[in-house]
Length: 313
Image (cartoon, rainbow, N blue to C red; front, side, top):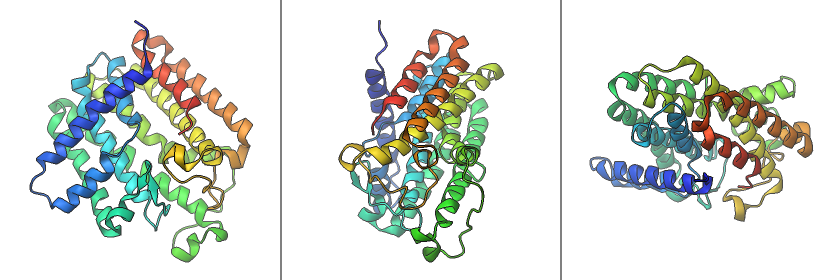
């Protein structure tokens, strides 16, 4: 039977969405308004690419969906928390996300911050309670490393430092104590930022999937999937930057044409559109070459890389 990525992603999205809705429904002791804000952001329409990567990595490691589901849900909680906080006025100051008003526009800044905090901590609870005893600790560690100070959060600080360096953005006026980056505007600098801000969570997806499937993870398999995820994350960021330049809010579900105005360091600004697309293709091929020896089990990962190169939202 021919593999159909759209059907696969839809099935995994529905599986994750049902589980996330059930989890929030069971949290009966939490304030209802907090749960409403969490549900509003967590269950908003989304591609669920990060959970899909957890399922795909588990498949590559010989596992099944039921083993991967806790990690898939946890990574989506952390991703959603990061979006809620990124959209805040003190950060990216966005009012549209996934085609809907951002959480702070709907519920106010204080509740948006707390909803993000609650999603972050619930992710660790999910892994601790529902992963196998042998993999739970390692999975929590992977989540912490990918989302924390040396991962996603650290990358966000460096990204904002570039924005702060541009006086025209108003970042310095908003937060005069925020550090400014005086480093060179190079491809190495740009990819260092995104290997942390965006890429760290994609690499965590691979770890969570393998840990779900194997109590004693195959190091060679982990290394191959990690290189794939590294390349996938950078290619994903390039297409994200290109969508900001070429897309529109109606199709993407978020505001576009905002990166240049904020002084952000992006691929199109640094390399131009054509060279950015070439860089994405080269990275994609490098990632595919890494996983090719694994065999037929990585077909979903192959199709997903092609999807990312062609996406427009």
